[in-house]
View 1 (spheres, one colour):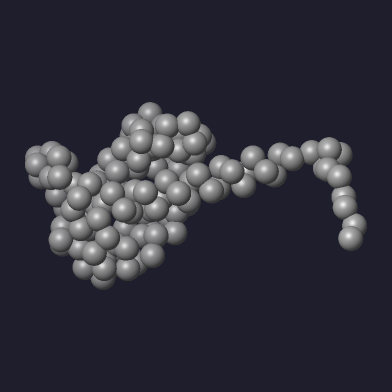
View 2 (cartoon, helix red, strand yellow; view 1 turned 180 degrees about the vertical axis):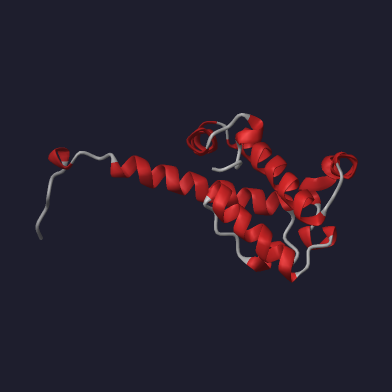
Length: 130
């Protein structure tokens, strides 16, 4: 997570674990990261970020001024930072910041659960043949 949660002191594995142990806190970390990424792409000042922070969760991302190019850039940034594949329609088509953060957290949770399954010991498996 090259910067994915690092600005909040949360590494990629920590954020993935946080989605399992404290989903509300994980959503808040992802939401804050989403605001920071959108602000950079849109050229928003720190003051602008602080002004929209209280209502950001309910803000439709296309209302912030995302165009097709910034949508592609934001989508790529989320893919790199969170390994989350957010459909362009969720970013440009009117998804709220909270909905996008929830989608990212769902993908992180799924990845964590799958990774935990990969640790399964084959010696403990019982094969049934029908």
